Image 1 (cartoon, rainbow, N blue to C red):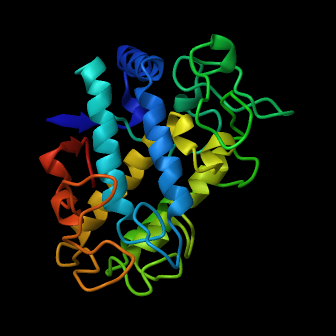
Image 2 (image 1 turned 90 degrees about the vertical axis):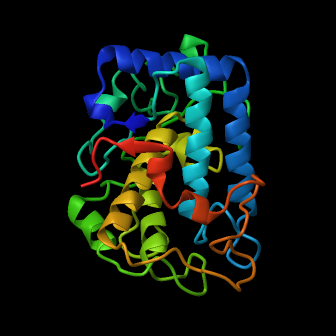
Length: 275
């Protein structure tokens, strides 16, 4: 059983194996397929139309399956690799360990946001951006420039205390845990982190930045924590809606999975802790 660890606890060999697997997926073209999928869905998910991956109740199970697929791809390269998570309530600055040159590299230079160090820097030659929203082919970040502060533990605890998963109108105007975690309401958790990283993470092609996977692993861990705190609070909607994914509806682009299939993450992996 795969165990997902806090990135701050990774050993140097664990970091190296993860980076090597990421670079191999990039070389063989599989990485860019994940970028294309995410960009396609975030562009088509709207508040008033069919929505699956974003602005909808299935935001959390959709990304859970997306991460499972990506983790399996990494493991096809290096079986020992699991996705680490970035606890952005604790590692809150551009000086945190995940931004070191031996792991993800740091923020971008002032004039254009280009990341200049680490294995994913343009100068390293191994990370060209092939699926993008503009003509720039290099990884960009502007850590902390657009949003000064990452979410705090107290803000996370406030969202985890919410007892209802989701509610009508089942979009970015909804109240409930899912939308407050996604970030369209309240203190803004998930969305704020994308903007804090900036650069490619602030676009639909956000998986171009490998930190996307560490961010979403932490979002998934927060969902697991919420489930443990509220075992009597089900995924909603259960049935009968339009334009969103009910509990037993199939989630595009897959034809073999529903939200109900993904409620128990321990069927696929565990976290070092969800307390």
